[in-house]
Length: 292
Image (cartoon, rainbow, N blue to C red; front, side, top):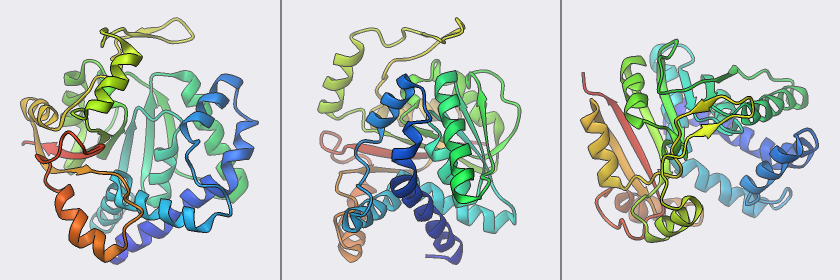
């Protein structure tokens, strides 16, 4: 691991520990009731404060996941350009990844359609500043990311949100136009080919994949509901929209359980075979860049 990636890991883990040990309980009292319940449900599987063995497993697995890959890229990019990379967190929700990547060394814009989620994310950002004394370089914007963007980015991150962006082709057009040379689009998402995921999402949404979204202020947006992206299909869509695949791997679960030598020798090679095990892999990491 390079020094840049090593430093990124230290900052990455410090933020995650803050979330587990300092934020999770106190922040809920500051959130509106609806957001409080959604936040608690989304983060209910965090390790308990004080359970160091569970926290260590969580940190190890998180670093091996899509988020760790992205934090390492940010560290290397910062070293290469001599500045903080500019990152778009597309569909930023409660803002966890925006703050995480700012902690890892990026300047981040978190964009989302939902004003309630953006308000909760801003509350979390302010609580982080109050409790740590550190001002993270994060800005939250309400934006329809299928429309014209107002700036360029080194990295565009999408976590569990591609399934909601509609039309996805409009979003990919903006990605292609606004990634800086050498920049990447990074997708962390479920493996849409997994039968369990398909069954669960169909129960949630029914047959209507494009219901739209009306915000609390009455503004209506095109919006997809849990659209699934199997590995082969996501590659076809990206390549049809002017993006070149540069990295693609599947995750099979249990990332934090294996000792490092076993993980590197046995699991990593299997993860890299994106064409293998679509019925059992749980998640996928997809990285693309404009095919200029």
